[in-house]
Length: 117
Length: 238
Image 1 (tube, chains in turn green, cyan):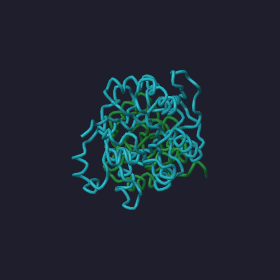
Image 2 (tube, helix red, strand yellow):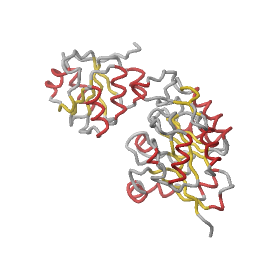
Image 3 (cartoon, one colour):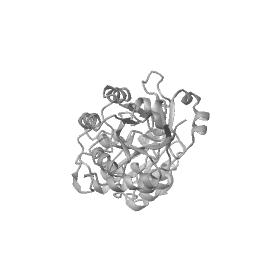
Image 4 (tube, helix red, strand yellow):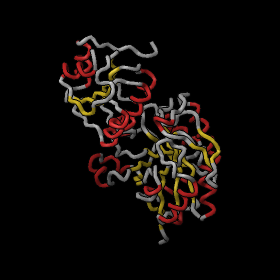
């Protein structure tokens, strides 16, 4: 399933269409601690979070994360949007809770495994 | 009675990867003087390696520079530590480094981490990524600062990220911290309205400057009579 297909099925709002839009989603990851994401999130995963600042995008680029899903109606701040546009990182958003979003992704068959196994 | 000193106690050098390259020791000192500051503190992320350079640059222009650090705890909260000497700041910096994950910095994503001397000559780069959480908890970070007779300050508690309040929801009442910092994004009045218990702390405001034109944008005033006292007395009794 591609990022665009997952976004459509979950009814996610498209905030920034990045280079991963038609790429396969390899899994899902949920964390609001950036240091934790850096240590554990595999490449090609969708990251569900409420963190909405530009460091989120830096980490997506560094780790080749497929995209960010902002949960709980959280909006990206201006710097995050600019950086996402510059770096071509997909940003999606939903008013649903992170738990709900993860549940729905899981129901679509998108699972998550730590990159460290 | 007595003049007040104007102090900006949270400034980054170009060693912090998120700071602009213009944040060189002599430039910081000149801008601080031009902003009418009497005292500044250097507080890079998880390191004190540039602190001495700015202290020396400050001595040339009669600006007092307090050696400090901004520790990112494992909870992703920022704690500023201010010290009475460059030596104690360096020792804390060395200890904090050991608690950083050894991830190499990638300047393309996070920025350069430049080590510089007091004449703005480049000494090298810091290889380990500084913009990361240490393995020190909030309590451990505060205890480390206190063990070197430094003053721990909960940094920018008004921020929606990287502050003790954003990460924990509150400041643990048994945390041995007596001072909190509010950034230029908010005001003391607003923050006390939202978190009335903050009035139990010494509240300071600082710029958290990452670029030259931010230096002195927020400051705290301290009684001149306290200038030769310890950092703790100087700021808490301000």
